[in-house]
Length: 250
Image 1 (tube, rainbow, N blue to C red):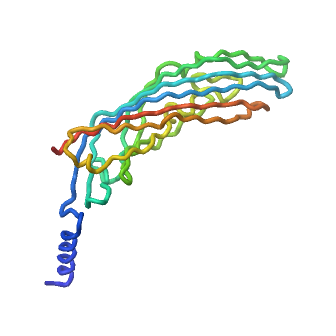
Image 2 (cartoon, one colour):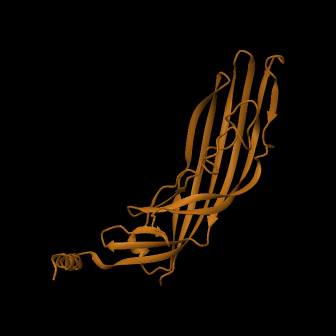
Image 3 (cartoon, helix red, strand yellow):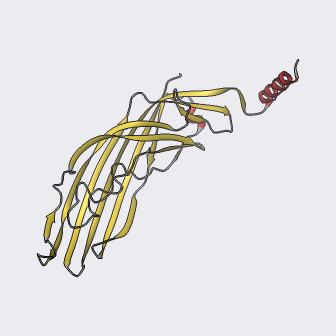
């Protein structure tokens, strides 16, 4: 017997005798269904003057959104030892980041008004009521998301998506550039908190189980300087999701 072969046999025998080490990795295969919903709001309010124009704004933009993925999304959990957390891969891929695409949409509404007053030769007075912009109403689209499993916890987040910037969309106006798309709305979901998913559930006998994820209420307050005076900006949002695992290998 060569020395290399002897070392291999010795290592294999040691692993077989080590407590908690499996002779063969455990595997669990699931079809995954992901569904999420959320609400978002942006309020912009302020009054002031830049010496030429008197400006006033008070607008509220609101979005409710939903998304889902229910087909052709399968993952594999692999566990090598009892005390080591399993790893999760999308079935047929080696990368641990299980990116996938969801389909959904949102409904956008807005109310309020913004005004600019002053000498017509210098100020160009404007009086706008928001809520009828092109971005209002129902919109549909797709988003890239990622489901990951790290240190025994399930994580869900947007994947390579850039949030829409305020200043456009439903609620925007020609007086200031802070009203419009809620910062925590579509493509800007608050991050849901990781949720523990124990190995005993993954490799147990249940045919299906659901992991519920939530960001909890999120609130952000800022001051945006517009045309020489501060505007108060409040963003609020909440994002919840359900991840359903349906066992395939039993």
